[in-house]
Amino acid sequence: MKSIRNFSIIAHIDHGKSTLADRMIQRSGVVDARNFKDQFLDNMDIERERGITIKSQAITLPYRSRNGEEYTLNLIDTPGHVDFSYEVSRSLASCEGVLLLIDAVQGVQAQTVANLYMAMEHELEIIPVINKIDLPAADVERVMEQIDSELGLDPYTALACSAKEGTGVEEIMEAIVQRIPEPKGDPKAPLATTIFDAQYDPFRGTIIHCRIVDGTVRSGDVVRLMHGETIHRVEEVGHFLLPRQKSDSLSAGDVGYIIAGIKTVSDVQIGDTITADRRPCSKPLPGFRESKPVVFASIYPISSDDYEDLAVGLEKYKLNDAAFVYQKDSSVALGQGFRCGFLGLLHLEIVQERLEREYDLSIILSVPSVRYRFTLTDGTILFVDNPAHYPDSMSIARSEEPYIRASMMFPERYMGAVMKLCKEKRGENSNLSYPSPGRIELTIEMPLAEVIYDFYDRLKSVTQGYGSFDYDIIDYRESSLALLDILVNGERVDALSQIVFRGSARERGLRACERLKEEIPRQMFKIAIQGAIGGEIISRTTISPFRKDVTAKCYGGDITRKRKLLEKQKKGKKRMKMVGSVAIPQSAFVAVLKSENT
Image 1 (cartoon, rainbow, N blue to C red):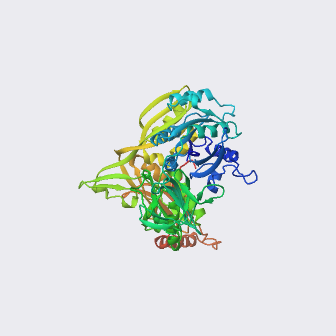
Image 2 (image 1 turned 120 degrees about the vertical axis):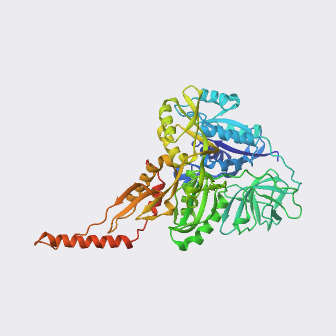
């Protein structure tokens, strides 16, 4: 155990975590130059396309220190976006130390501070690293001042590096073995293992990613999952080398994988404890704090025949994304589906794309919503995240929506644009501070429903990419809410209903109607698209019908002949409108979700 070091790399998004991990992998020699590729640990297509890390990835790196000793470094690369902070918290529970990466140009950002507090909660050794020192705009002195004033860390313990060029990587690896403590635990104690991740393999079953806290596990051992009380025989254990490397055993302090032929995906829960069946540990290890979904949307298969495939796909996906929650749901317009909870709008997008790519599913998403709280006239308190369950407006005594405390950091020159954006989103109780010259930290309270819609994208636009954003949910506050229904040809489409702030209901209704007008194909009859609150129509747009030239054959004679034909056509179109149904394409549901800028 003296030669093991478990550590993680944490930072704000786009500060160079994956690039630094690449340099460490190259330095350790676990992969040759021919097989190496940039963002090596980002093994999903979607991660490489977007240039972001979505999943934490573990890898074991051998390292020979300057004094000649051999070490085993278990590295866990983590995401930086606020929507995937749950991945970070699970990774930190398996480590003794972290590298806190800070961009030499952008400096300390909102998510840098949030990740630092998370590492402090786990009582980890923190090594500050200033990255991107090769850039012309890099200002290491300014960043060291920020490390001192904003993070409260000793700036003289910070290491400077350029992950892109490989400068300073050797010093970082040396600091890991010198400054991060060895893992604690007793290899001879009863087995206690915490599950921090898992993935499904169609041939081997569930592959469990785990950190051994106490004891030793070998191939052939009979183990018990303490939460589900299920018993399994271990088929294989090993370490996360490239590819996975089978080993005889995993002992206290190791990070590795266990394959035990678990075919039932629901048996494995992230945060559960594995122990020996014959000699169990006295109590389960403390699990990770439960993730609380803040954005809700329903997922439906395009074809009702694919419902079973969607159910199986979601169960397997849940194993790989512990922050994702779902339950059964149904819609008049779209049939059977699932109501899902997400950590943010980017998380929702990623889940949709991964389900379509990895499980070959064609799905439709309903309009995202947050969880509202209603107090009814009889005193009952009702939580509603699905517009279909909106209570009767006559029975509502008080309606409340969740508020967040948002923390934003940006250069001083964008102050006006950011304040204007926050005012649009009903921000209140703002507080400004100047952590360093030319930089502003803005703390403001605003409704969560306004933030999930398009706030992050617009913040990045108005600050030209320099603004950073993090938030915490604080409480529920009274608000004037209404149920906005969308009617297509007089029929309510329940999948497009939204719970909205009454003050912005007309604007939201107009936007939804305009988007649907662009997406729904024209028919032989006129189609009215309306936004309604109760029996009141607040927005409307009309899709013009195709015009068949019934008067083309009238090449002469009295005008009444043409009028007679046009009246006959008018009656036919009216009858067609009464019996005709409008098929709403999948793209129309997606279009309503998008902001006006996309």
